[in-house]
Length: 364
Ligand SMILES: Nc1nc2c(c(CN[C@H]3C=C[C@H](O)[C@@H]3O)cn2[C@@H]2O[C@H](COP(=O)(O)O)[C@@H](O)[C@H]2O)c(=O)[nH]1
Image (cartoon, rainbow, N blue to C red):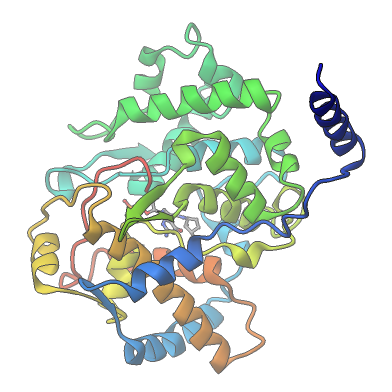
């Protein structure tokens, strides 16, 4: 071995043993918020409206206070798991691995739905119902070991797990199976098949856990390109951390020292709510495309602008709320969760709400 190779070997040993020679990278950052601001500053098809944002800030603050909206709200949802243990960690990981693209190519009344606990669940809630139903049938659907065992966890078994209560099957079934298999394999190879080990490897940093998911799991690497610059949205990685934080009320598996680094989750439901609040505006060709229920391809500049401007709009909303009430215990996560729940409440009664945009992808 040359002298240089010996030195490198020695340095590596010293780095591993004592952390010597490791340049301090500083606290982890996801870069999502900065990328969202960059997109918004360079958007020509989507615009923010500050006047509506200020009005919305008072409305959102008042309504969140009236409902005493907090991390505890998460566990109050009847389908969300309540156990403060590893089973809920695994449930949330499985849920956020598959938390995407529930909308129907056809009309909404035909869309995939599940009847569970004598209620009809659609969208995100149909996924939660599916997982609860499988567990009740003693199918270990939230166990990473199960996902890699193609004998026990065959495609046929998974088809029964994801079986629909309507004539339309769950969108992107094959992609969902691929996500489970890939995640199960990476957890097995790098994290002792344990989601808890994955969380512990982030050492209490929310941004660190988001970056670890994006680095190790392709199916969490939610990124795009805008104006020739790589931009990160990391929607399901971020909502996984947020769901943990909320489900465990900021303690135990949900304890993070930098939780406020998590941004709004760039999905297809919140932009719709932000538009109906007048906070974001679409140029006429884009608005027409959305109103005509036409798909926008994944990665299209229009999609990048909708997602980036929505993240930045919620950040500005958060700042306006804190101007109204500086000590409000409100962050982007709770604002986002509240807006999603509000959107679901209003889904039925407000016919004039613009449809959500239609981009088929595994990212949201
Ligand atoms: N930004 C954001 N996106 C969210 C959620 C949730 C549910 N979160 C629960 C946890 C805490 C909250 O209180 C909620 O109870 C689902 N989604 C996304 O929406 C889409 C599904 O829409 P629909 O087909 O109509 O169900 C799909 O992209 C899904 O990934 C959220 O909270 N924020």
